[in-house]
Image (tube, rainbow, N blue to C red):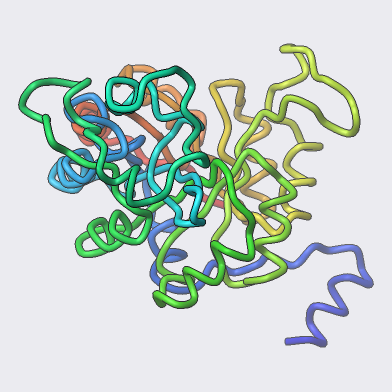
Length: 291
């Protein structure tokens, strides 16, 4: 195997890195994947156990969640860096812009994370990352988005729980992705884009479309997934496929738009409404192109 890689390097051919394990198998499934964004967040409070359970019931192929670290270093599942929007932190403690990192995990999991969405979800709590992944992995596959925290801590947690080849990890922080790959080469990783800055400068909107340059850099990070917004076209997707990579697009809630993206060759749709997207793609007989 080493000889094959050396020969490939000498002749200028980039070897395709395999995605092994249950997570890799899930990513490589034929046809477009439907990925529930923060769970079934159109029907339940985002990043909570009810949202994850509804996503699994809707047969989402993967369930995405976000995490930050609490003051005592525990990864907790929440999108924002502050507690204000999706919990009762302000009512409980007063003030505004209460940072996740300013409160302990015990304080955070004691908050109400459901009442803001609707009365029937009153009392729903902020889960820890471990509890959330356990709930999802019982029936599905987790897409973990790192919002804050170092790669070493996440890799250590995944290794401790035996999840290294059972989950997928993504981040907008490409240096985090690089570090995670170096620490755990078998971890299936995705790089989110477009980046706000690239190669030392801010990017204009017209420069943020998925391109061969972005794809090459993502491959160099060790990521096998390109996770982008709607700024994708068939040529860029083909480039990724030729490198053995997959392209997912976020956050698509219009079923017709999802079908159009799949027709371009997109391999996964990240959505707040996995039920409707799944039904549309099935009805359309949509399948993603594979290299």
